[in-house]
Length: 69
Image 1 (cartoon, helix red, strand yellow):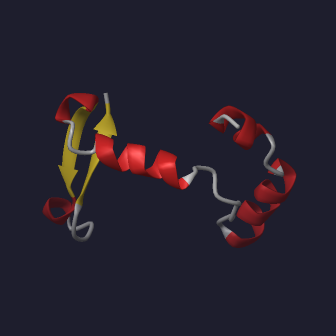
Image 2 (spheres, helix red, strand yellow; image 1 turned 90 degrees about the vertical axis):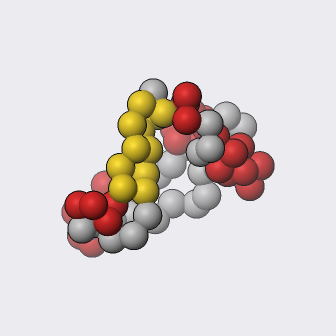
């Protein structure tokens, strides 16, 4: 099943209500373990990203994140 179908099949009214009530919503897993591994593998490929943020520099905590190109 493709991700678009998985997203479409979510119970969006329940998700919306949870966001209003709790400020967050939980869903069933959207990615398979194999898809997660593929995403993890992309992280070292700098050409896939347009920028990188060092969280400690901005006192956001420890670590970094990148924005896809």
